[in-house]
Length: 140
Length: 121
Image (cartoon, rainbow over all chains, first blue to last red; front, side, top):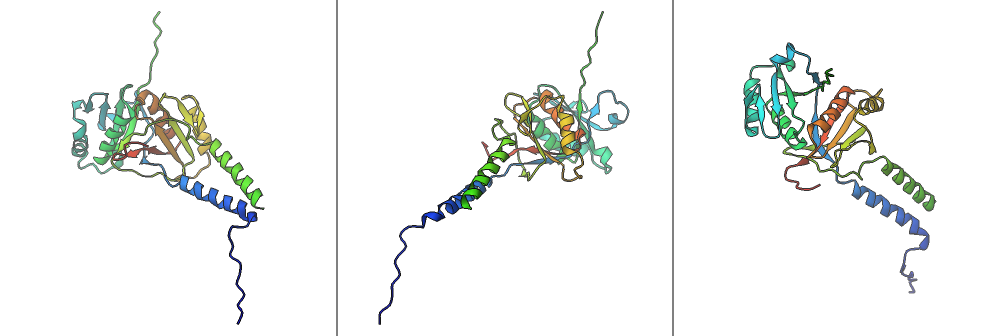
């Protein structure tokens, strides 16, 4: 009995080259987008201006500089900030009571700011920033 | 057919890269816990030279709030995510106005950060 043997295909047909290229591009595009950005969502209410007075005084105030962290005027090590905020906010259930006003000196860098605000949020605080407004006075 | 698809793909890839910010150089800050940021409507970058960019285009701090408001106009709450990519050495006088602008425009602020065990981006 004679069986017909097919010829072995030794190379892909050249007409398939664009399709192969297309598939390769899709593959590399998918590979390139495999590493997504990571980060942290932060809910920041609209910032307070320096001029507002009465209500914000009841909120916790954290002052940041390059070297120091102060909570309502008391020096606190950055490592203890979460505990200090948690203690200060203990018993406060209303969101408005848990707002923590963060004031940063101009030299405070972003890494320090992120570390501090992460600590405050871990202590139950809701961050709001206070931007110091520059006032120019012309002296005659 | 394959050739046309190929050219279209190249075209859209180039188009997509024209609005991205991957050409900007910045070093992300580190934090213990991070989550995937997902898709966002806009990205604000402050690079290593303390320059401000919106969607990869240079912009002044004064113009940022209005530009963000026009980008977020009509977008329903919960879908107004804005990525903030700040070099970790940038100072508060540069990044605080950007945070404020995002907040004032009603954007959902997403800081782009690395986990602390990731030393480099």
